[in-house]
Image (cartoon, one colour):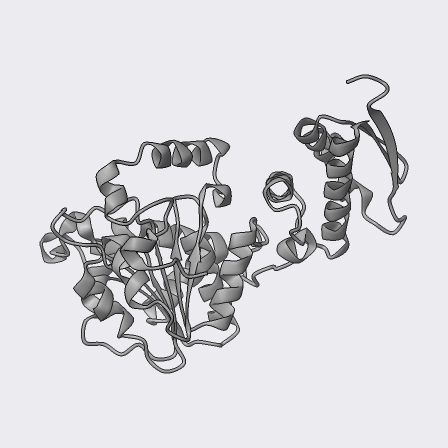
Length: 344
């Protein structure tokens, strides 16, 4: 970079803004911005100076102003949020970061504030609020199950529903859980452990245990849902790619009055025998265009785990077998010839 192409820009931070939150400990947020955009950033008092190429400086300035908006509305601004904000600013330049990170899900956890970290996650939360049936499809690490549990806990705490029901198909056990030791909860705990982990992240362990004993929080394998009508409940069907067509139809028709259901799954990780089509793949065509149902699709840009997870997801997408492509899968979306246009 030569001096002729270098520009300098100064940003005056309002004096009423919490500067340490904006800059981060030892200016770590500024260092992240420097690394992301290839600029030099320094802060003196409430003035931030940026030096670098004009395009890079413009991107960095936009990111800093967006972070300032997040601080202003008291949205969480930590290392994870900074990384997420930079990723969003890079992939969705027009995204409203203030609105995105200010969408705090009101769970009783004292450990953290739960907010969407990507545009699709924000779209997901809005869909759950607006629709009684939401189907979330995407790779591992995109927050599908975690955010669904957070919304369920918030709905329970706000008395919008009377209970939470968590279920998933126990494919590894072939749904024949009677041979396993212990009561029902002990039998299915290994298969529902990710949902339990999310609950424990949002509520005290004793609270989860108490609500489970009273039946306010219920965990059960999908086979135990047959014949029931689930009223006044927030239902989460997890790992739905491992449901058969019959199981998916059975699960969806359990929905009762004042109930909300979220179905989550990754259509690239089907564990069913090759002869059994996945119910999650099938419903993308079957339920298309029905009012009151919303599909939300995630991709590798929505991965909020270790950065390597996104790279791994992309690598597997590139190496996806041609036979799997012919069955209608591509980056978590059905081919148009397999299931019609993907729902928006």
